[in-house]
Every structure is written in structure tokens, then in C-alpha cells.
Image (cartoon, rainbow, N blue to C red):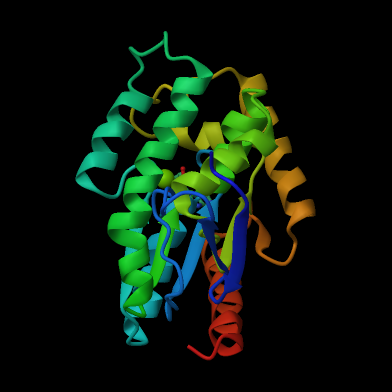
Length: 244
Ligand SMILES: Nc1ncnc2c1ncn2[C@@H]1O[C@H](COP(=O)(O)OP(=O)(O)O)[C@@H](O)[C@H]1O
Ligand SMILES: [Mg+2]
């Protein structure tokens, strides 16, 4: 019996949820504590340029004197990186969509609790390569498990943590895969059929329409420098708005 949930919204957009009838059953519930950091996530299909842009943004913000922590999903902690190996191993062809969705949640729960929340409380800027939006799009929409169900599941995994800014690097899935093909061999998710990657792209577009305030879409076919400049100007704006 979980009873009624109480949700309180505090900056930076962290939803604290408490069950009235049971004691603190949420995985990462951090009731009542304010966080002074900034949480930025990057999203987009494989090859859109997330890793490239994270490295540039990290360098820029560090040069300005900010404490910056970069991490990635799935992964970012020892336990989450072990879960990552399971998820992306091309040999794990038998993995069911539900197993995959739960493994992403497990890796994320560990990352949020062990690294992201402590860093945000500490006033750091956390930049994460993919977050809940990826699960909503890949498992919820592209694998057809349902965006709402995956979003709900992830509220348990993250305690309701939502990024302050999400940059969606909008690149047609086939262009992204072509960029990736020039790299090392593709992992289990990257090896999915073209139709899967098309659904991922369409899923992201849907999400952008739903949350235009949080998600800033950028044309990722532009040059690396152009994209970097758009990212830093939006980040600076948000830093000013939040008085960090
Ligand atoms: N704006 C861009 N234009 C052309 N190539 C790019 C651009 N951004 C990244 N790349 C290249 O595309 C490949 C994939 O980029 P990467 O940052 O690894 O993407 P992701 O992390 O989104 O999968 C890399 O070889 C990278 O150098
Ligand atoms: Mg990458």
C-alpha cells in the first residue's frame, strides 16, 4: 500500500515525492533539500554530435571557473558501467524490451543517487550524455512500450529529477548512422534497423513539441562551432536566469 503521493516542486526542478502510508520507499527521494547546481543533458540520435559538444561545453565552462562534472548514460558509476556492458553487448540479442528498460532505470538510479544529486547539491554543473528522454524515446516510443509508462518508471529511478536544460541535437537518423559508421563497430542499440532509428528521431520531435521550455532543439547538421556557440549562449542565459 503506497497511499497518496505528495509532490513539491523546488529549484532546479526537482520533484520530491513522499508516500504518506509507507516510509520513504522511493529509491532516491531527497526531500526538502535545495540544490544549487545546474543540470544539463544532451540528447539526439547516434552520431548527432553529443559527445563532441559535451567536451567543448565542459572546456568552456571550466575556463569560466565553474565546477563541471561530465557523465554519460547508461554508465557514469562503476555499477552503472557494468549495467551498460550488459545493455549494449551485441551478443545479448535475447534481451526483452522490459529487461532493457529496467536495466536503464537501474543504471540511472545508481548514477542519480551516487553522482548527480551530490554534485548538484555541491553547486556543480552536471552535463549528462543522455538521460530519461532517451528512455522515453528509445524504449517508450521506438520499442513501443509506451512513453507514459517509461516516464512513470523513471520517476521512481530518478526521484523525479528533471534537467534544467536539455539540448536536442536534431540530426536525421540516417545521417547520424553514417557519421558513426566511420567509427568503431556498432553496439547492440546502434545495430538496430533503420526503421527503429527513424522512430527514435520521430520520438524526439514529439518530445520537443511537448516540452519546448526545457528542450532546446538545434540543427545538428550545422558546423561543430556553430552548434557550440548556440549551446553556450543558451547555457549562459539559463545561468543568468537561475542566478548561479
Ligand atoms: N556538427 C558536426 N558536423 C560534422 N561531423 C560531426 C559534427 N559533430 C560531430 N561530428 C562527427 O560525427 C561523429 C559522431 O559524433 P559524436 O559526438 O560521437 O556523436 P554522438 O555522441 O551523438 O553519437 C564524430 O566522428 C564527430 O567528429
Ligand atoms: Mg557519444
